Image (cartoon, rainbow, N blue to C red; front, side, top):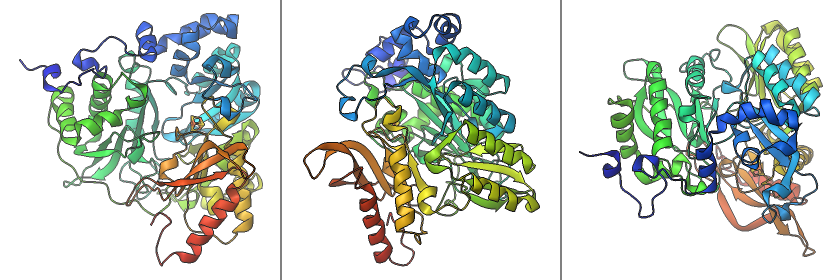
Length: 546
Ligand code: SF4
């Protein structure tokens, strides 16, 4: 009889694929996961580590399993980027943690927002950064506070479970789900349903690597389905039924690949089965030998779309899935939902841009107070480090906008404020080589001053290392942090430049411009030159990526 092992081609040395019989761990991460499931660290944090303190934490938990609850040690202050690759992990570890709060679909009510704000102020020295995956990250967390923080988050329906780690991470959704007049369908129930069935489920808590998901019916395709491991993209089939087009195997980092369409139509009732199939394939067939080849994209790339679909249908879903249409082209050239727009119920939503996603506890409280004063109980986070207030009555919009702007939460930002993102960088991240947030904030200020009339869409993504948390390769101007040599021959912080990346129509990766690097100091001059050249030389209708 043919078994999965005999039907799928074996690599000579094996890739550690469980379905092919390779159950013995082939690296330290796999060994740690086999020794004890990441989810089990929760009880040890509550019972032991929070009571006995940082030094009581088992190293395998500290640098491994803690991630299953959104906890990473942050970088010890004062260690420069040149030491990142040289030092042992424990030499880089601070005694404080970053804590990632997962916000599936980016959906928050004001009680939840205020809870995060209170936690930021009481336990995190006020820090609160919006990520480009709709999460909020807090810093300076002490292990002693973690059980209290969980209790408060869980009391309002929030969690940090599987916010990091080799797990199904936060599920992206359109911030306008349910209120966008043009949306193909409202994915909210499907996001909740996946969350209930798969998050914190030990059957899916030992994946080869992280697993990023998105579900949306957004006409602007704001959840960047092209770069998720699995994405359900709203479509209407030939019978007029709304459902999803399935994409698999997207991801950036050091070997960027765009997701591929399987060409199947997934009705909302089948979402959980199909999700179970895709995540099951990843768990069972995903590569576990080398961490840098473990994301689903490598398997999809090796298998191809046809084989992936066949395995999904025959071994997992156990029936053929119908063919379906491709999504329509995205609405507009910006996907961020910044600005004031009508909802489908006569109210308005208002999207605003903090600078490079940096907020704090007081700002989160201010946002909650402003929303409440204007009759709203719902805010949303976006995948562009922005936020949206929903349900504003027409006669309250002007006042809400004025109050947001008075708090430097800009509703009508410049292109540079609107479309520049920055990852965490050297301030807290142990993998970072350079600083990012302050550099990007300064860049925005400089470009606004130097190019006040520039209005075209243009994305600038600033990353502190090659890992691409802020999506280097799909930005018009992608900046990859590295040390460079300045005009005096000194090693200083700088960036390798990638130009012309994009998502959506004609999506593609930016080209690394050979030898093109800039120091952090010269960055504003460099970008000003590039943008200035584009602005004067572009032809009618030509975007930066063209
Ligand atoms: Fe850290 Fe690098 Fe990710 Fe930035 S891109 S947050 S520096 S790992």
